[in-house]
Every structure is written in C-alpha cells, then in structure tokens.
Image (cartoon, rainbow, N blue to C red; front, side):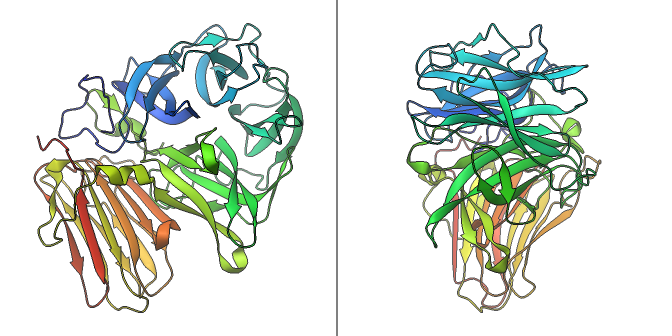
Length: 471
C-alpha cells in the first residue's frame, strides 16, 4: 500500500512497508513539491535513482488519491547546467503568472553546484507527468557572502486580488523571506534568526503555514525547520515555532519546540492547495547520523505516514502542534483483534489504540517481536512519560540503538501506535507528543501484543492492515 501501484517489485516482501512510501529503487530523503491538484496528492522527494547512496539529486514523483496507496510517475526534475536539484515546494499558479499557463503546477527548488545555491522554477500543465524548466532560471541568485541558501517553501498570502507569493528560505542558521507577484521576480522582505551561533546546525527545509485556533477564534502561524544537530534522540530532527506572519516576516510568540522526540522525523513538509483549510504534512523517516547505513536491497529511504496537524493551547506556554495519522489510513484497517491474540508482523502493519480514564494506575506497553528484532512502547501515566525502546532492533551503529522519551501529562492514557515492517510511530496525549523510529529487522512471524499493568487501560483497540499480503 505504501508502495507502487504499477506492479514493479522493490524490496523483498518481508521488508516492504505497507503504510509508508518508499521509492521504486535508489535513494530517497526529503519530501518535496507537495501539492494537491484535481483530487490527487502529489508527492515529490529527493532522489538518487542510480544508487542506494545520496548523490546527484533529482525529484522523484508519486501520486495518490488516498494518501496510502501511491503510484510512481516518471522522475519530475533532473540536474541541468544550473546544478543538481535540491529540496523545494510546488504550488498551483491559477493565473499563469509564471508563464507556464493558467492552472500550471509550478515547482520552486534549489539548484546546487559546489560553488552556488540558487533557486529555479519549472512548470507542468499535464498533472505533473512532464515538466518544463523556466528559460530564465535561476530566478533567485545567492547573495554575496551567503553560503547556505536553499529549500524554498512557497505559498500564497492574501486574497485573490491583493495577495502575493511568499517564499521562505533556509539561510545558514536562520530563515529569510521573499515576495513575488509572478514566481519569477523575488524581493527580500524579512528574516527570522532567533538562535545565532548554530546550536542545532544549519537550517534546512523550512515550512510556513497558518492553523486555525478553536478558542479564541483566529489563527496562528507555524514555522518549522530541519535542524541537522542535537535533536532529542541525537542527530537531525524537526523544530517549530508558533507566531505571526504579516506577509513579509515571521515573529515568534514561543520558544522553539521539537515536532517529534524520536530519531527519524526530518525535513517535514506540508501539502499546499488542500481544500477546506486542512493541513497535512509528511517527513523523511531517517536521521543523517546513520541514513546511509540503513540496510537496503533495491531502495533506501522511506517517509512517515501523512499526518494531519493542528494547534491546541498549552497553558502559559502558548500553542502546541498536534499530529495525528490521517483519517484515510483507517479505511485500510481490519476489525478489532483481541489484544491477547496479537497481530502477526507478517501481515505487514498494525495500529494499536489505547486509552483510559484520568487517574488510572499502572502502565501500558505495546510489545513488538520478530525473529531478528524486538521493540517496546511504554506509556507510564505516573511518571508522565511515553518511551520507544529499539535497543532490541538490529544494530547498525552510528547512534542507532536507544530508548527515546517524550513527556506527557501524568494520569490517564491516550496512545496510538502505528507499526509497519521497519518502523514505529507513536502518537501520545492525543498527538501532542510524538516518537518516530525506524526499527531494522521488524518482520517475520513475531506478534504485536498489548500488556497492561493495574488499571491503566480502560480500552484497547488492536488492528492490522486489511488486505495486506501475508506473504
């Protein structure tokens, strides 16, 4: 389900994810060019088609109508005289201002050479099947004295008649903002750099979007970035701020938070042009500490499940990002399975939902066992923690093994665990605390089971992916 719908084989069945996208072959990292158009979710990504290692970057391309089953399309963007193709975004140019035609899908992306990082655009008028690069590329050149200048996220700000395009770029250990009326000519408008000195390394893959607030009415903006160093589980991770954006620059109203406390949630990007104000994002499920060492046969790299995001109040600290697996996944789940019976991993994927009344005592654990690996998720309402322990997974060195922890309010349990053939994603406290980890060797006949101590869990819901090939 997470892979091709065109029948091409990739990884051996026992390793191929069912709920997570992986490329047909070669290397994958950051998600790029996410746009919803004519009922189709477009997913591009950093791709080296000729190797299992990072190399000259292209944009791979896949599409879906349900965010679960993906169909691979031809490679969207190739390196050219301006450089290889780094990360970026995509929008629908309804007025045709960029010159590709009304309603064109326009990709905005960084091109890299050893001496330059510049921004270019390309357009498609056939639903992303073919792309034409702009003859005036690059449309935004690297300023003098700037080394890191990449990963444009573009969106529309304002109304149809009085709005403009906004670009946010990662520049060193900060972000810069630009404005345009035609996606071709860009002017600087502001900057955001709250942490000089690179405590978390160079910034990458920024995203900028508004989310509605329940009470009081209104909205807050979210600015997220990929941080290369010192994430909660070590190595790379995704940080975010909430605040205000006036069409020119971003002003934070809180300190930075981590979007995920596991090891494998990086370069998160959201889809543009989704109707109804819905905001869905997805991330690369790996870590630069060990990404090139993850075992692979035909393909290396996969993405998280798509997540719907929102904001909820967080006491005196402002607003916290809430993430939940998209509702579309539920359509592929079986009826409940008795927790004592477990779900065999050979079915490919499982979803565990646990919840309890406030004040219940005891811990809840989800245990995942396989012939070559085991892992545990433990929610301890007394300690106010949820942990994901992958020390029993196949070791690959480079900081892979570990127990990763996120804080949750004490008392009561609200936990979702999504398990696939090589990954675990944990959503605790209604999605306010998340842990995402690869778990190498998680396949075979071992079961997923639920263990409860005391009165911790009032309800348990254990399901597997309906129709998955049991192999």
